[in-house]
Length: 573
Image (cartoon, rainbow, N blue to C red):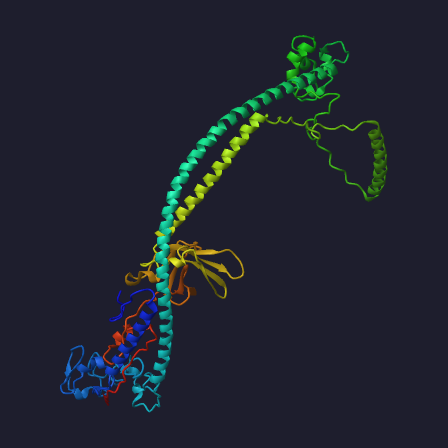
């Protein structure tokens, strides 16, 4: 690409030389332009700009610029307003809507309202607006021009460095994008292979799990049968013990009267086991032997029966009986009762101690629960099948995890590649980066292409000021503004959003932030890829219109100072 006439960049190694040549070329061009702006004596009325001087020809009558009327030229600047548009009094304060042009040689030309002419206040840096007020004004245009040149030099240095960094980032982004696409293709190819490998491992796993399941099922079935047989033996032993305990007269039979000795067998829980209730348990016979007891009686009472020799079961909860409210006692009675209570407590303790010595402690069934039988270990053949199946499962799980990780890498790369990082992908270096700005009260965090957050400086949770939306710059500068939307909702208001304006700088940083409207934030961020480009070259001379002068940006490249031709033209008094 030809950046400047006569300067052709050839190779990367000659890049620095190319830029130096370009700088020399621009400098020579600018000096030539400045040398052409020689002093020319141009007659024009006071307050008229060079761009408008052709309207003020002293050799013929003056026509108001709006065409409303024509007047003799000697009535221009006669301190009387003849034209409705005030164009006949550019150098006086006679017209209310007039504009006075400050030449400001050595600095920027400007317009001021004609009402400020000769008002005793110096508005033009060349003091031309106070020609008849008696005020002593100093011409400060050269000093202002010098300061502006220093600012332009700083801008030029930043723009030059930023542009060179931007070119480097563009090259790196291009290489990075190519590398990511190459890596994505490799990952997708690797994914196909891993999917085939996973299916093969799945087949191996299922083949190993089939005999494992069969062997484990057989082992569990044998154990369940063994447990059932053990439980049946225990139940028979408990039944036989219960029969012996109920057979009080040891006649080998259990009668109605003997059943009634165990009140816990009461079917309706009214505290008594009646003769009809006991007869119902025995069936139609008045008494039963052990065989009939096992077949007829035991099934209906075994859950309630409490052995006389085995640890007792927990008694069923008894209903609470209401107690009479305590009687109010007199102070004298309280003292006497306290002494009586102390004596009774001592006696009760002695009695309890004697009873404890005589009777063995009763341990409830809940205190020492019956230990559940543990399943015996697998036989060697079954254990070998289990180990082989587990090994195949571990291998499959590891391969499956590897495939999931690979798929996540592919999704991440596809997402990154899909982002619009600018026409030359120059903004790709911002991806996965975050930048912070600390103010007096908050810490603002910008993560480009992700989100913007706000957090109180001294703690607290983050507030989402918006997630990445799109580029939102004007049509001719789309990539100068980022838009982040759908942040945390404001109280009775919209969701928060942030507009990020990008400006040129040598380093990437968040420069400022504000909230011009409720829940709408603005952030200014600078960086080398942000509006750092080769500027157009324009020098200022006296032929520029005021609007043109406003539109021409200061040339910020190669430390070139703007050129202002000295204004040697004379204005008619």
